[in-house]
Image (cartoon, rainbow over all chains, first blue to last red; front, top):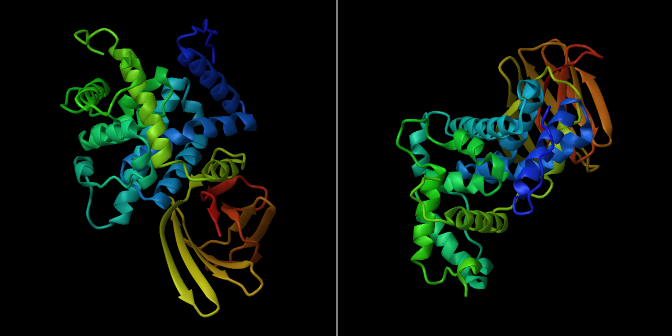
Length: 206
Length: 155
């Protein structure tokens, strides 16, 4: 890694995290075990939500996330920036998830276009429903998005901010095809939330 | 962000994304122990191995306990294991390698490694395995780099 430390802007901890990730990657590639542990701790939530967003069950999603890390150990030296790492991790998790799903349904070959038919495995727990009107509004708004937007935003929510584009690249439709993009999904979500009176986040409060 | 977006939409998006992260962390948290299982599976320091992906798992209740059968696949090797409960609380692992070969089979656990040699038919047995986290590692011969390994599983 040759990344120079960048000045940390107080309003943007993203830079700090990017540098941290670059340093972690370099240490991991040098064979430092503690760096691998930190990398796994840091990035596993993003991969968990990638696998679950692809409709995998609780056990299968864990297998897929673990497999992704094992494959990374073999491929680590072809990855030379944090952005490439994030993109590789999310892409591989998604591929492994499709592979696992194809195995589960052995006979029927699934195409990616069937993601819309896959039920999200997640249900909102009762206590959360009762507890917080604003979260309910958010949950409803997310639920009204196209399935592919849901899967994308779910991963974005756990990705380091400087690497949103890397995640989008791993999950979005190929360039040139009509599909959801991060900005379109977020704009749609914002629109739905703005129309919901129970959504009253702090930035709008007087 | 497109240029027609009103001022401040980035900030609002940031807020919504943060809220989403909190919501999903509550609704579908990373399973407890997953990070530890991954870290354990990565401890084996090698870079040239095939990853044996769990393909299917069957469970059957038999007299005296339960038996689980798990099949792991890589491009060149399949490992099937039967895990059965023993009276003393440990488990017995009966396994088969396909294609059959007299490879060295290791069962790694946080407590240590137990090793056995598969016979010419690819069959191997590891008995009195303590319950808990394990990972199967296949080597051509002792001291060689692993040919293949599985993710860690809980037996």
